[in-house]
Image 1: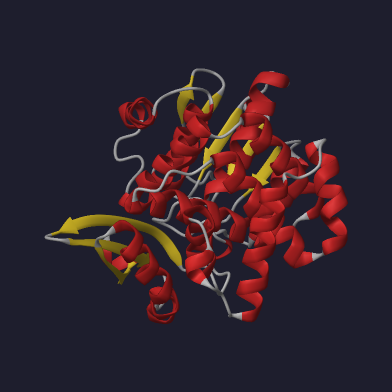
Image 2: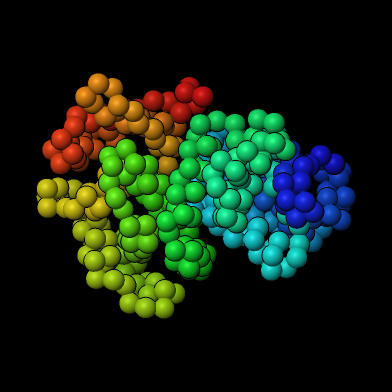
Length: 329
């Protein structure tokens, strides 16, 4: 067996285990977090997940492409899963991708952040145990976002929203909401916009709830245990109306809603093709780079009117450019 303890006798990470050794792993661990894509699994995911279950292992399966970050809210959901096994049930968790370095290190670092470590402490802890862990910029960037989220958002809001997702939202909707929140965090940093994180989370989820089924609004409020704030309702409604119709008076939107609208547009196809972003100042221009899995030129074109509004408000030239995520590694 090959694994490294990140938290002694509680949380470990490693490469894809040999099927012949699953019984040995099951004698040590109570749960697996599996991060490999379906095509990476000998025999396919159904066979593998059933094999793990047959040994009494609890499994969280979050297929993530190699060299990519795990989606932001999926990271949080995995952290909740790990925390439940470790601290509420006294169990042990094994996290694996294919090599046990990049994707696995991103998840274990995220759990350390969830548990209270700083971003640098979490990454340094993982790298001191697994050489090369958190392999690429995209994985580091998502951990920056997760640290920002954990530091600024109410844990009760985050945890409640994730319970709502598990009960009423599919994975596609979760990943879209996750991308809206992630891009809003990154773009707020680039454009120097102050955001209220609880409102960002609630508006994103409420927007998706409205889009999916307005009859779920009562369920959303029931999970929160209180009525939705009127501004959150208004902001989510404006987002939905304007994304649906394509007609929007951009100058009438405050920075918070305009930022979210930009993030929605950048995931317009709901395929998370914008993996992460970065920004730099070149002369008198702010350059925001979208690192994409697929062609982002149409998204950049759709975003131009929003960028022009931010230029006027911020008094700086802004350029939005696209670059291949994998070619940038």
